Image (cartoon, rainbow, N blue to C red; front, side, top):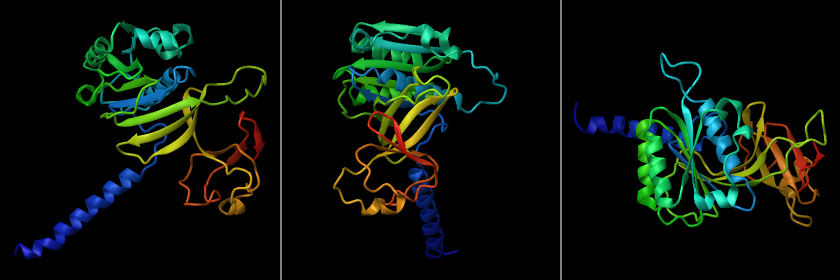
Amino acid sequence: MSRFAMIPDALQTAADLATASSATRAERWRPGLGAVAQAEVFASSREASGAGAALALALDAWRNRERGEGEEAEDRRVVVWVQTRAALRAGGRPFRAGLPPEIRHRLIHVLAEKDEDALFALEEAVRCRDVAFVIGELAGAARALDFTASRRLTLAAEKHGVPLTLVRLDGTRDLSSARQRWAVRPAPSARPRWNRDAPGPPAWHAELFRARSHPPGSWLLREGAGELVAERNLPLPDRGEDTKAWSRSGLAGVGEGWLEVADAASPSPGSASSFGASAAVLSPDGERVLG
């Protein structure tokens, strides 16, 4: 066979690879997809949302991890939580009694005086096969966490299979090798069904602004019955704004608030009515006003 006869086959193979890569890239993030080597969660130290969202994401990945042959049904490995002194002052330390029962008695808390010490502890933790996952907290600019240090953490986590979720309190979005980068802020909790005055489950507005395998997006994340629930949320148009794109959905004329959509299908551009899912309109304080 001549070299020229092989060209169409080679082009077809390249096209197939490009199509497969594009399809993988286009897959929208959702709970249950499993862990990535390193994820970053950016949050304000004044809102107490970073650690909770990081733990929720880490638990979701851990609960949905792939199990190898012969692996025990119950994962008995420990969980390591590393904080700097500055992060502890900003957000407090993990409260053992408030943690999920499945990890409550297996938490190892590490307090580091400096960012460099915390990075060393994080790298050592992800290298240990007896660790299920690692959470780290750094505050401020964290100059020690440059791209080289971030790359070291990612490579170590990938090599040893121990995922790391790093909370960046008041951090800057500089260069990083993290596979997912989130920005979170607190969201109003849904009222409990049986006691409307009781505090509801924790919830967060979460923006995935960079990811290796998923397009950017925003979700309303909340804990529900031992699992992470994600609902797409989009800002509604302000009063007086052109609402032509919303006219078919019955949402035109509604004031400021949030559109809550159960994550079932990707929307088509410019139309809210294309979601193949249940929808409701929430007021700024989280009350359901339509749907």
